[in-house]
Image (tube, rainbow, N blue to C red):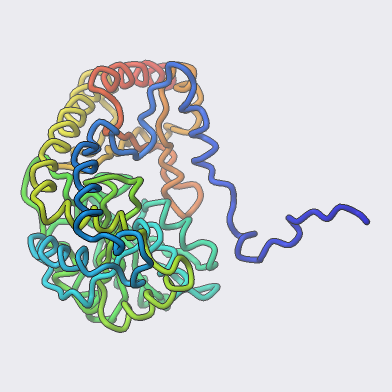
Amino acid sequence: MKNKNFNQLRSKSIRKIEKSAIAEILRVINQPGMISLAGGLPAPETFPTKIIEKLASLVIKKYDSLALQYGPTEGLPPLRLALVSFLKEKGIETSFENIGIVSGSQQLLDLVGRVFIDPGDYIAVEAPTYIGAVDAFSPYQPRFLEINTDEDGIIPSDLEKKIKQKKVKFLYLVSTFQNPTGRTMSEKRRKEVAEVIKKFNLLTIEDDPYGSLRYRGKSPLPLQVFAPKQTVYLSTFSKILSPGLRIGFYVASKDVFSLINIAKQTTDLHTNSFSQLIAAEYLTSGDFKSHLPKIIEVYKKRQTAMLDALEKYFPKNFSWTKPEGGMFIWVEGPKNFDSEKIYWQAVEEKVAYVPGQYFFVKKGQGKNTFRLNFTNVSEEKITEAIKRLAKVIKKNI
């Protein structure tokens, strides 16, 4: 009997998933001496290991077998109740029944794709957009419709124009400290976008993983506040507690919540009970409010180091975003600059970043841009990396 190549058995949806170009590019980051400004990883030194150790013991004593047992698909009540107060501080007024817990925010993106996307459907996204969302939606075979953006986020007139031209299933965006640009949609713009969303009753996924990482300025209200019936608000504990615990959460209207919950039940039954209860105690014990400033202190210094180094070493015909928080800075060079081409030269100098073209769904865009991450590298290494990168760039312009 001949050996069968099981690749031949792949489903049509899996065949649509291509090997990540970014993954291939980032293979180099583990080389000795490499300074990676490429990933979007939180700094391990910001993880509250002592707090988690304390809370883990508390959870066992307080909840006993509940912490180790199967739980409801929508999430355990202690965490959902804690999130009502947490979200209220952000301006979101919601009830316990409208809050769901997922295994990291990436799971919610997959569930949204599973519930709402049929092959050929149009999904509206920012240009550029978070590539992880594109990857999550792609197995369901949508077509992506890019919405133009500026310093304030997506442009409402372009959104309205394009949803008149195409039947759009939903809009996906990152409203605060966007990945990859670091930009934040102004509150005025949020109200304008909300009016479009309400006018066309457009389902919108507002992804907000970075909103708590604010170093300067005042936080605008979430888009969900201005269009609550149409907006699914999504966030995570990955940036404020630990990514390894895999705890995400969302707020949705009753009908959307029910659909997502049914889909989740068929995937993992429910999110890790023990992690949920640690997250619940983190919010209610006061540990979150005492620890978040420590995270912000680390990241603020690193962002300042990167902005200062860019100002000191980069050519004057380059520009970059200056976010009030988050994890990323977006750099734009002259039109003839090719960030992927010089990437491999930068790697030879032991510096890695992500070329900007990979954050656009239309090929050929963003060649003169790239994304830098500052959260997982010390100030000294950031300065050295920017210095090396500037040297490579100056050789090529």
